[in-house]
Length: 460
Image 1 (cartoon, rainbow, N blue to C red):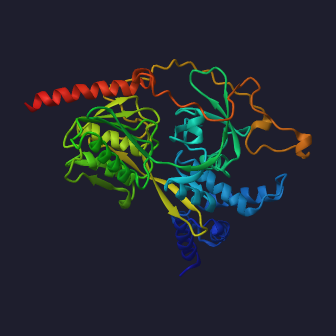
Image 2: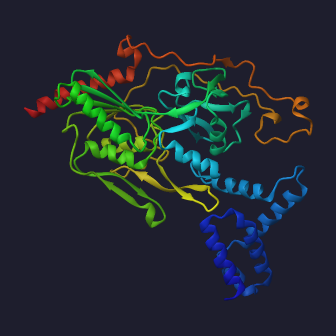
């Protein structure tokens, strides 16, 4: 086989494997091949040799001329991160430690603050705080924009870097600077990390026969826990079928796809649940419901808001399209893309967006979200004035002045920021009327009562 064909095949194979350690060597082979290849065949290759030559030139200049010495391995890893992060906010390169943290986060036990975050309009944003975690108790809210982490500006951070900074050993503190709608000044939170053990399902009876199930995220055991909750509610109803159910998916950032599909299947007898479309055959999937509705057709209301994302949007969209449930609250987050985790030979992984979700009626969730059938707000006054105090020293990865830390000094968060004391936010007073404690849930219950009355009349 001619040398140029061997080179082309080798680069194609290693790029599919994503083996970063061989990248520089591949470039060298490619450039040598360009020099030796006949002119009439050079433009027939699928390998972007000119771009690889430019990459090699840049890599060599940085290694030789940059003011600080940086290893070639680090430079190549950074270039991979940059390449993937430019695709979309949810694709990323994971090193070995980050891949380990990702696996832990789907099992329901991990160390950190207890928030799901994402990039929205280029800003690190809280998708949702997880119930019964330090972040939730401290008062973080869906939609909060994280400006700084321990004084370091997040403007130029990628998602994985930010998550890595927020994770840490239990009982250690972290300072977050937050911009929030309705607040004219940044908010300062000091939160103590903890081992996050989350139960993703909670339930109670709102009124006789009217059940309530809150699902905070989708984990491997979420549907199993939800069925246990339904069993308990039926027992509490003197072993009689429920009259109706409120399914609360507010601030549910998503999670395991199978969990969302199984949850919809719990309440449907037939029909499509969700389908995906992508460029490759493996990215095209369709999920159908099987026979059996745990509620036997009893009315359902699903609560959603801007913190409802991904898997929770699949549930809301499927139940809405099938006419099985009334969706109320606020438009959802709009995270309708599928990420595939591709392990790499170095122990890391590639998280790559490979498809989009579509509801049974063909709606794309991506960047649109699920519009509720009935819009109900939590009656919050909104007035935001984001305050930033940015200097060169605030920028992530800024060049130091060569002096020691004590001489150089550190940039602190804005001195006029509102300070929150360390510790947990007080729990809501359960003695308060539901309309005061949770207006959206109050309206959901009222609508559920109406649906129950209508269903009884139609059954006559």
